[in-house]
Image (cartoon, rainbow, N blue to C red; front, side):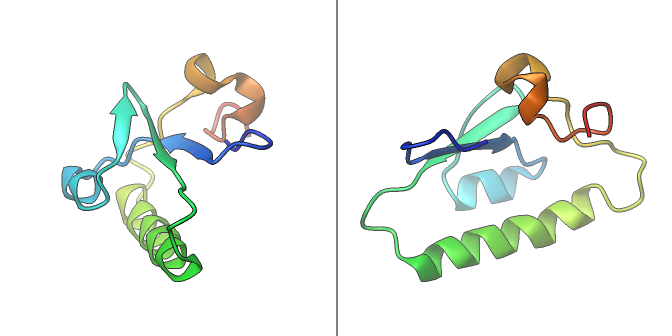
Length: 85
C-alpha cells in the first residue's frame, strides 16, 4: 500500500526474521513498513524490492502457508490475500 504523497510503504510483514533484521523493518502485527528517505538510492530500492520478491516466493511457494490477510490493518481494497484478490 502506498499513500499518495507519502514516502511510507506498507506491506505484509515478512515471515523471515533475518530479512526483517537485515532491512531493519518496523512492524506491528502482520504489517511492516519502510520510510523511503531522499538519501536512499534507486539501486538500494531495487536490491530491497528484488530480495523481497525473491524471498516472498519461497515463503509462500508450496501454498501450504498463505500470505497474511491485512484487510483489518490497511483496508480490504488494499489487501492482496487470497480472500481479497
